[in-house]
Length: 105
Image (cartoon, rainbow, N blue to C red):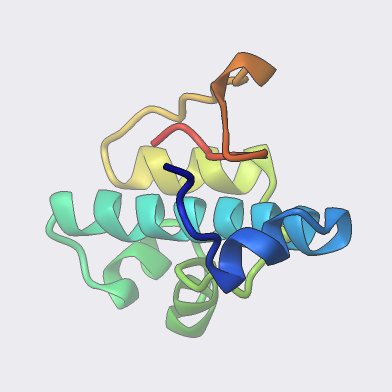
């Protein structure tokens, strides 16, 4: 018995949509990891901002899925300020699910 395709399933077959979705999902994963590291370090956005010499509004942007200008230097500073290490993982194409990649979290 074949599963009925949802509207999302149909959209994910469109290359442009899938690429935009994957990028947005990756940004969401990064933003979520920043917020999670900050919470685990028991820091407010203001406290983290002071530690990395930026503003509370910048931290708020970094924790938003709409932000897409992450760099390794910035992420390393955030990780260190939260008492964490930055770890980057490359995921091979064998980890593709339903035609699109999911970031390793």
